[in-house]
Image 1 (cartoon, rainbow, N blue to C red):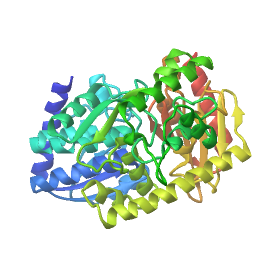
Image 2: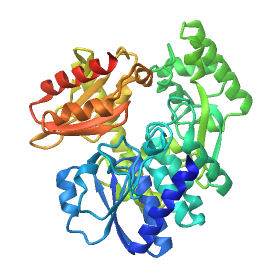
Image 3: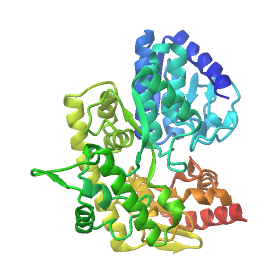
Image 4: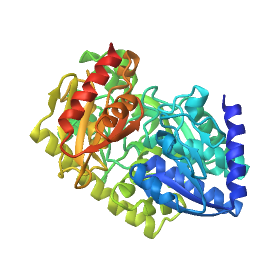
Length: 459
């Protein structure tokens, strides 16, 4: 299917070059910024004049603002959910979200048209990369950004490695010398976190007796004769010897098995990790997942331009600004999680939910929902929905569900879209992670509609 897709990518690439002037419209998350950076760089190399616009959500208002543009509109990491509203626009789309409507033309590049999962097998940045590659083979050096986009949408979570088109893009990245992949511990922070914190914050899988307990993690490592410090500096995972890594992993496997978690859960400790070969070891940019988190920290606080500059190579002012925003992002996430744990999760039918009101930012409510879903504090039996104020008249709803529930028929993208439409809102996304915007004050009605949609899917 990739060969056929590359033919369509070539048509889009030719259309962009022929247009000569393009406005890129992209999403404010890691995948969207990576996609936007790939688009801007490949156009620069091709001599195409372009500018970029970031949107939280592509809705009717955002589309109306584009109607005065005299440029070709290139939607990256969005667009497929609003096909019916794009009539009259001169556009191309590279989007991996579930399509809402029908556009079988060459302009709409979406993996679902090829029977390929946009949830697990390719990201918006990946599709944009394929167009860039079709434009000029030297753009293969942007495969690393495509992997950052895939990491931002946690597309490797189900299989503990990237599959499908993402795997093919990683192959291209290795060949170009910009991506390195190998089997290792999957815990977040391998490049930057102190070793004990790597275990303290582990959540996929949870480590019984260790997750959330810094002292227990230090004691665990000391019992294994693994030095946690080098002088006064805390050691990191990437600094360990191979034998030390194997010792820790085997001990963690034994811990999980002894606590009754089973071989499947223990097997999630290790998987493929993806490093960006051109970036410095021990930095936030070396690991694809950590890089994606840095981009999220810029976009979700109104500074997507900072993330874009980092993607385009700024390692001075832009990178320093991104690190400052990352610290703010971490504080915001921690504050939101503390708030939800203090207020408690509620239940509505088969759903869990929380309402962050104006306390939790609408741009991070989905991240918080995802983190809580994998925590030990709730049952993973159904979707978790988070609400946050978006503006004076609208509320953002973000939903997450365990990937295993899709095998039982749950598709949050469809459920959120249908529930929101009945209230005059919009929704969409992926089967395991979706969002919606609804009128303020309609949260309980939305829960009732969403629960009905989910129960119908399960039935």
